[in-house]
View 1 (spheres, rainbow, N blue to C red):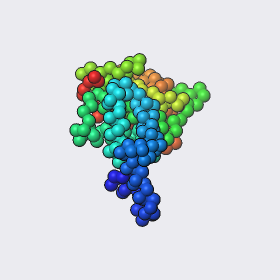
View 2 (tube, rainbow, N blue to C red; view 1 turned 135 degrees about the horizontal axis):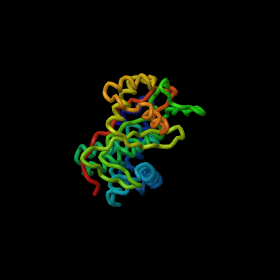
View 3 (cartoon, one colour; view 1 turned 45 degrees about the vertical axis):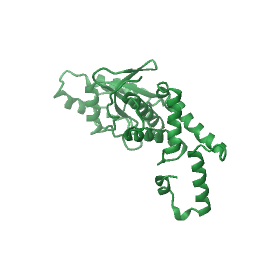
View 4 (cartoon, rainbow, N blue to C red; view 1 turned 90 degrees about the vertical axis):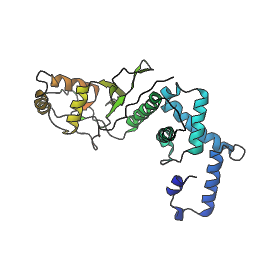
Length: 264
């Protein structure tokens, strides 16, 4: 058990014998001592592999069998989990790769690391506890309509695009992307222009403002811009809502840092 793991346990509340047994079992799993704790060793590794297959399918397509085994082995043997619950394995895998990459133990192309982080962001949006307001029957966006950002929204800067399930490196300029869960509970990855991002950031600072109010501010910079049409378009996609979200609105400043590299 690592020091980080030990720090997460209230030592005074854990009986010494249970502590020793936990230490022994963790050591067996880390060292793949299949002769001592075969069921636990197989179970833990199977859970990690299942998360890789279900959450990081695109990334797995760019790993050789040897690289996949090395990732699972390294994670089980060396990573001290901060949030060890089963549903947090994906987050811990990302932390492990980032840490080992930073320490020089891994030598992943930057584009592959960005892809891993993108798939993790997709998972975060899917399991976000925020409730996305459903549009009312016959609801239409007009100049007086208030606007809020979808509470699951994340703005990402990506060094690739995904076309028909294939990952293609972006050109010289990174791709701007809005990642969110629509009212129908579908994950949406929407390409954006720089001006779209600027408008979303402006709206993020004044949630609940009207289309007319936003249009008046935009008119100073782009007098002919059809802001109402823009708002209606992104409202249809589910990126914008006309009802206040049930919990705190998102911080749209969270971004995956731009990466450079190639997927081999």
